[in-house]
Each structure stands twice: as structure tokens, then as C-alpha cells.
Amino acid sequence: MKYTRKLLILFTLGLSSFPSLAEEGALATFKALKPAVALELAQATLKACREAGFQVAVAVTDRSGVTQVILRDQLAGAHTPETARRKAWTAASFRTDTVTMMEETQAGKMQSGVRFVSEAMMIGGGIPVTAGGTMVGAVGVSGAPGGDDDHKCAEAGIAAIEDSLMF
Image: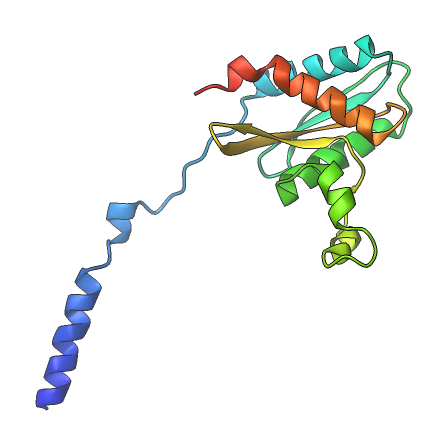
């Protein structure tokens, strides 16, 4: 009985040292791109690609990979909107750019199995968008002659809205 009482006291003291849900908050808070900024990013990226001589599609997702904006230049291929969306989704989902994903998931590498994830697009052109060290969305580009050029356009688009991302 004495042993049980001591355990009960220790248990009660232990519970009181943990913050309650009310103190921590039961809900998560996070930053995300507003639709106007997502559109600005898509337009800036499309402009960068045009200036480089490429007709592309650009997709911008929120931090969870849900599409916010898709823009397709008039001469971009019919496949480019879906490819851009999948690149942005991949960057958001895996929280890394698709050039890195392409390299790290090659056959024979430890992470090669993620290439079988439905929707994943391991081709350059998808980049997470961060603000203040937090991922707030992702951008994907498709239609330039190669993934490296898609990637450069995405970088230029992000750079063009960098001031909007400061908080």
C-alpha cells in the first residue's frame, strides 16, 4: 500500500511537469503563400522563361502540394501544365528541389524507391519556396529544353518575389 501511494504521488508529480494542451495550444500555425503572391510567383517565373526564349507552363502549390496557380504559355506543349504541377507537388511533398531528388533517387541509391511514389516527378524544375526558414509553397516549371533550364526559371521567379516573402 505504501509503495502504491509513492507511485501515485510520483505519477501525479510527473504529469504536472508536462504542459497541458491548453498551454501549448491544440492547433498548429504555419505560414503559407497567399493566392496573390502565388500568382505573382507564377507570372515572374513565366516571364523569366520567356526572356530566356522558352515557352513553358508554371505551377505553384501551397506548402502541402495543393495547386494554387497554373499558367501555360501559348506555345508550351499540352503536357507541360501537368508536368509542372507534378514537379511543384514533388518539391513540396519531399521538401527539396527536384534536381536534388533526381540525383538522390537514381537506381542503386538508398532512396531510389521514392521514384515509385504516385505523382512524383524526379526531373529538374521543381523548387520549394521558403520564407524566414519555413517552407511556404513550391513552384514547378516544364517546357524548357531541359530540367536545368526549368530549374533556372523557377529560381528566377522566386528571386523576383523575394521581397514579398520577407516577414
